[in-house]
Image (cartoon, rainbow, N blue to C red; front, side, top):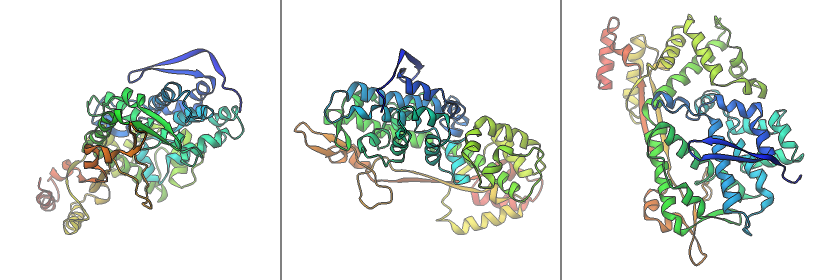
Length: 431
């Protein structure tokens, strides 16, 4: 591996969350300049949340820089010179932090669900494939892209490096909580990150926190809990996501059924038919998606046209508390009534659920093993967080799930046709 090459002069990005983001390494500066990383400017960090919190227009580009900056502070300030930290891991950790989200598609998770894609898989393809990112990484060594990819895949030999970027308290989560709170204008996501960073200590295969920083860690966990329920799972945002996913489903179904689009969806073609290449994927961003949504306003297909109009002009679905699994009879009755009323339930009657586990301790053998947060006690013992914190113990392992049913109230209220069925729908929905 080459010795770390530095820029002749430090570069800085002015940032509303971290004040300044510092870049001294030529490798990092060159990665930021690649087309694959610059593409992240055209993908929102919070998908459809801007339709609920109008300030949430920030990008995955700014978040990725923020994660890099948190990692840089940890390893250049807090860990530097400590026996348990291997300075040789510095660049691979910084690069993995910067590139951890480079594989996100437009509207991120909604897009992934509809087309059964995985952004982490595309992140690894961008790092290892024929890309500008790969060319920059290879300058550090032929095996360097593989090392960065392994950190993101959580298979890297040094578990300590992985935990800095992916754990229950990592740089990724710390940045998005603070950044998303700032741009949505809420106070829930704020916590004392500086205190948490000051109390972090490297240990073999893990990162621990001095017990004197326990209250700052508790605050972080409660902030995360509040942000999920007040922002990330907000029912209005979920209504927009439901409509977005139905647009993509409808467009794909029409394409596969041989529908003649007025404007052929060239950029989506390989996504629709399951032959997407890395090059196709990188060409997709939210600007491209919005362009097609605008075009589809002129389509003959009434469902696609209507859904695009709703999404672009924020004519969202109404919702009620509803668990389809527990109310099967009511669900079946509603589906039949929607059909009789001339409203396609596949696109206009949508159950949706959200769930979150704010903190969990290690449970071997479970499908998703969660590495716990460890405290470094005064006598050098290491204790799992929920054994010391009454607050964290109270919420550990407790999964909360919220169920909603989404529907177009305007179509149901329009009783100029099929009035009998629509009145019955309103009665069942309680509206």
